[in-house]
Structure formats: C-alpha cells, structure tokens
Image (cartoon, rainbow, N blue to C red; front, top):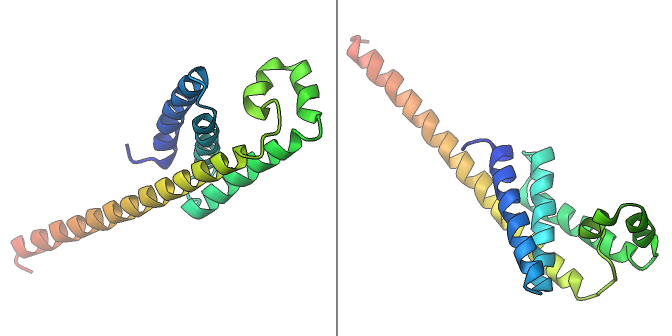
Length: 143
C-alpha cells in the first residue's frame, strides 16, 4: 500500500468508525480529536505531498474555524436545511473542544510526518537495491 492517498483513505475510514463509536459512548473529547485527525487525512487525500506540520495546522485551522462559527448561529441555519451537517459543523460552541482539536491535529501531523519519512526511507532502499542489481549485472557481464 504505497500510495499516500490510499493509506489516507483507509485510515480515514477507520477514524470515522472510531469517531462514531466515541460519540455513541459519550467520549466527546475523543470524538473531537478524531474529527481533527479526519480533517488532516482529507488534506492528505487532496494534497498527498503536504508535510505533516502543514497537515496538522490546516486540520486545526479548519476545526477552530468551524468551532468559532458556532458562535454566529450560521451552522444552525445550515443544519436546518441539511440535518446531516450537524456531524461536520457541530451544534454548540465549547471552548475546550479547541484543546481536543489541537491534540488531534498534533497526532495527524506526527503520523503524516512519520509516514512521509518511512516512505522516503523505502524509496532510498529501493533505489539502493536497483543500483545494486545493476552493478551485479554489469559485473556478471565482465565490465
């Protein structure tokens, strides 16, 4: 599974499932953190070469914007028209949600950063193996 988009899509599916379980169990802070992780994974789906720190910053910025928008009442009007938006826009402003979003954004930033580093290591190792095979081939031909 070498594609960053594929990895992000698989991870996002798991995060949605965990987020729904967390919500059902009343673990709101965990659900909020997972929401930030999901937003970060969506960033990777759209822009797979984005660095982990940028992914985390964008995830937190989106979550904070959505949370602060709840102070305006605009999300409430949107949810009147499309009730499912409640899962994207939330229902009420809670300042401590920002801490959970920050934790989730930090987790996704670290995760994406590590995945990128591991991918770069794999590419270097593949290149070294390719060069080694070519050298062995040339030696076998007597060059």
